Image (cartoon, rainbow, N blue to C red; front, side, top):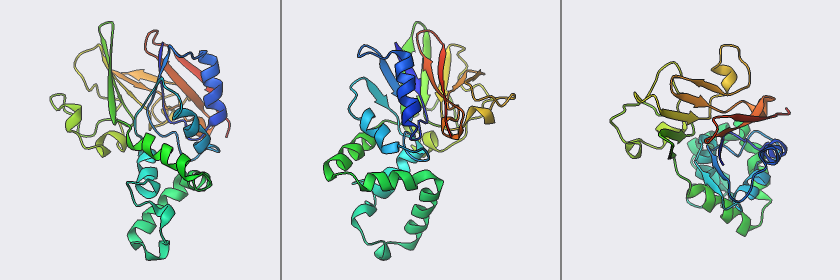
Length: 237
């Protein structure tokens, strides 16, 4: 089976409970739509589990991007610098990220051995920004947040990464004309999408939204490609 999960946000307990509920085996495959880090209590513990699984495709989310930008070896790498010597604008942006849930990630990351830091950075910096699954006549377009300025004739590879990880999907609008093409996203908690404000998956207009706000006390969800079922575990604030 193939399962799509998004926005774990450091909710390690719920993440492990969901994998147990799925009875995940090595023959199954996980597609993670980004934002495993920040906000929740154990982001680095989640990352340490993800990087050692072989049956995973990880897509970058906006929080992952900021983590790489500020702490990654190919970013500013503020772990090795005297902050007083850094560009003040970068420091202001760094502070905004910390206040938006990055503080727990940064603290836990700084406690890691250099080799463990490098493994996490390499994993995230090698992540893709989108993925396409074709299954029994259906096409699933996987992105973290959406497709900003969407035009069906523009290939996904031509969009700027930020247009895929830092936008808000218009769930009232069908993107692809083909009724068997679906866009699966996280990023926007489904209580903000659904009229009933329930922390459950949203399906409509060719969209499948699966960020059910686990870190805010909602649910962590996994969408099964083969069955179309969404499996949940309850979140704990």
